[in-house]
Image (tube, rainbow over all chains, first blue to last red; front, side):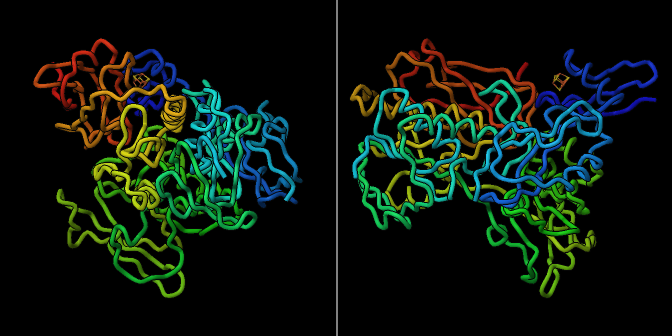
Length: 117
Length: 415
Ligand code: SF4
């Protein structure tokens, strides 16, 4: 089967055609596009950014991110987890908010410092 | 109160400009910020993709901001937050806050870094009722990402610029049903990466060459009417589609925030709605510099930082009395180019100059050609040029020496 996708690595945005059985890519203009094409079709990953509830801070929420990309199909599972978390101020940027999210080996970390409010 | 340098605005532009001036030996520096904390718009841009050029890694907005803020905090730069600048007269800044009250601050040099604001519904003339549930995308972003409340459940977004796309994903992740993104133009103004990761990932349809022609609801928004538009962007009768929704987000463009500049009598460029500057980022008033979105709307914060460092460095040179005045030429825009920044160049300096510009529509296989009196000074081959992506070119010292009059920048078909 051929899957048609757009390469998102650089602004040129080449239209790629990925042959899933043969693991081959056409339509790319550089090597990075080929690597992206295979990865995006076989095992797409995304970094999730969101907020968790924050108690006692100058804002009621704290921005967080997965400090690496996780499989795309876990996006909403990851959000469910994020929506259950509540942390207390103060928080420092880079603090681990949840370890090893959904067994991906990736942690959820704070993306800013927040003082007590 | 007297400072060597006062920077107005504590977002990425103001922070980088102040720090660069400080690094270049200017010790009495003040940043004035109207919000309760520094960082500007980055604080609400919790998605990633910032800083690939500046920090060589992919950061979220708040992370990028915090790195800039930390540098300033470990310096002797002073900061006044929650402070509103009312007026600038000559080099006197009139400002007010709850602690100091009304202040007149004298500055030997000023850097303007007030950023930009969003276009609103009024600015784009959407007819219909006036129910609640209509937000600018940036306002909704602040509510969700900083104030912590969700703005709606069933959403239509007008405008496919990057903020609109980012908000589509954000709302979808938070469990809202994003029914459509509507774009007036036949192409999106967002990065293709955002089209893929914000729309396609969440099966959100993008309607190109469409617009919102009616808004219905008493109290809360109930539905919007969307119509296809013809090549003159006029709605086509009989193409009406109705979307039931409680929320409409407007992502219809940003305008440089220049009320202060206007009142101060500084010259503005009608093409950018921003200030006119030369290659040192100096405005039409000596000793007043500007950088960031107050000049032109950037799509990458990395370029804001770079431009701000340039402004900070030149403000320091000015304060040290080492900036030399030279013959000034204009940078004119020709075929396919909507504007350039800087708009003016001072000749006879041993420097290279980076020029930023935007194209008027998508172009393929073109050359950006720089000419002076019909003579080609430089040309740059480009495979793809999109209006969503700011272009930049660098003119080297050698090329600058060939310039002896106004220069014209235009697109030409590449062979
Ligand atoms: S294939 Fe290469 S040139 Fe084409 S979009 Fe991807 S990275 Fe860019």
